[in-house]
Length: 329
Ligand SMILES: NC(=O)C1=CN([C@@H]2O[C@H](COP(=O)(O)OP(=O)(O)OC[C@H]3O[C@@H](n4cnc5c(N)ncnc54)[C@H](OP(=O)(O)O)[C@@H]3O)[C@@H](O)[C@H]2O)C=CC1
Ligand SMILES: CCCCCCCCC/C=C/C=O
Image (cartoon, rainbow, N blue to C red; front, top):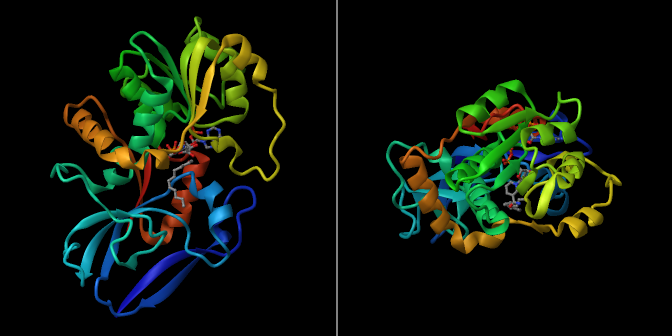
């Protein structure tokens, strides 16, 4: 008999998630039926989307949303043999039973020297987000100036590097000086700490006096208010995230952006990686190749221990991570 440990939501988050919003529960799993398999989570992912989506997708007592790389430990389904590794969206749990629906095998050419946790990061959902969100919406061209915020995180650090591969000048913003050093190490041309600059507008102008052709927005809010004013005519904007607003219970009223969009003739489009689900393999193949060629560097921020998962999640939302925040069971 297997006991699954799972993190459940005690109450809906109000403002920033707090340790007391989470409860660890043990559940005895039943024996497998025909066609079922038992999986054990090896790596789990903590991602910003959990904060906004939990409101509409979860009720109190449910297992927290999330994905993992899990190994098949028992199987009554010949299509999923013991020992196979899959990415699943089974939530914050150490073990789960599946009939195979929704399990994604790791890419078949997974190199022996790469950690499987990358299937949750640079070669997984965040990697695919950076790839299509940048290339299909911002459509960067050689010589373009690209701006990305939350630049030292899972998505942002890849966006900047893909921008460099495509011949852009890349400017990043992040929330600590340690992160700025990281951004320079992975090839960003300019980087500033949005928490310590005296004026966002001035920091954006100093980093690129001629303005920005492409803006990959992970943050929204005041940062975007400032960034829109620095766009060049016909600039392209990917609205990928709005992390500065996920904890707001009342939407802030902001400057109204229509005049900037109108007079600069900007293109601004929301992006959800889920829409690109059937094109994951194409992006993953390219991401793996760039990693193998040394053109794309990945960095992981590891929290050890399933019992520390809420702390890893809360810490990521506060900006403690450099690169992809991962939990090792
Ligand atoms: N649209 C889509 O399909 C997807 C969207 N996303 C979005 O992309 C963004 C980045 O996700 P991901 O790379 O996984 O996460 P990150 O690894 O970038 O971690 C989140 C980071 O956000 C930054 N942050 C937190 N609060 C604020 C704030 N108030 N203002 C500015 N920055 C803040 C922190 O960095 P710092 O120290 O710099 O503040 C923190 O490290 C998120 O908005 C997420 O929702 C992610 C995946 C898919
Ligand atoms: C129950 C929802 C699972 C969705 C996982 C993928 C999230 C993609 C969209 C992210 C948006 C903002 O972070």
